[in-house]
Length: 401
Image 1 (spheres, rainbow, N blue to C red):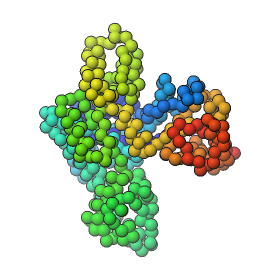
Image 2: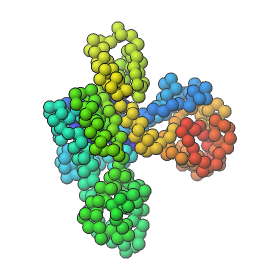
Image 3: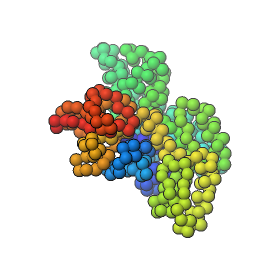
Image 4: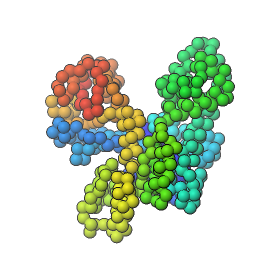
């Protein structure tokens, strides 16, 4: 399953974002280090379900479908708040960084109102610059990479040079635990202008340049500019976009999303995560406090930004940055069912341009090992095992297993 890290300094709304996206009930409070152990829970990517295109009523198993909207599962990790010098072990730094090893993409929740200092303590709104929070997170991850690589660099360099190893492949295997790909290593080498054949000549400066470039290419990031309803947040959002043009900056109100999903769950409003509006079902079921909250959410969040941004962050992380597509495996291509008769039971988030053999592998390694053929369930035609699949394809895998 795709893993997304929810990161940031303490007290910026990370756990509220996490709870709104997952209903996991992570502890929240207005002081640093409320989150000590990493919270893991299932969140969802929102996509258009193919049930309407196929004119069927689906019965999802690994996901859910509401009014033609399919919510595909991803794993969200809410980790301990990060403070300066985390790479040296300050605060809960070592645990924070270890928890992020396998995250494919990071959602960095920042306080766009500027009302928390560098260590997460409450301060006057506008007195802290959220741009500094992004720079400091980049620096901590880079320093963390550097400290890991530097421990055995002489040994690594010697083996690459004397054994004439392919640096990128060797490096990927050696540091597989922190989720670095061979492609990211090649990109970092080019960006840092380094020769992978002679790492012993890099020096400390070269190794740090490599660590810096590798962070940029191996830990993709979205900035969730949280607390958008607060005074001064809009100006800071504009500054974040100007300063970090390579990062998506999404205006976010995790508290608004948390309120909406809970009111929707109890039937007071009609709202799906990612909707650009909400509808009150029965105003008499709302408490005065809830009614007032909805008025504020409408005026300060929806009227300004068109939504809470929580679902938008997850969708951008998975569909845009990681370039995943939704594929529906079935066993009966005529009725779009599995062997138990469930209609469109599963949806897999696969790499763009994945092939039927990849889908077979995702179902089970034995299915892939004994692969025979694949059928496009929409057209009822056989497709080659190296045929590039696209968003919303429904596929039957034929196997001897």
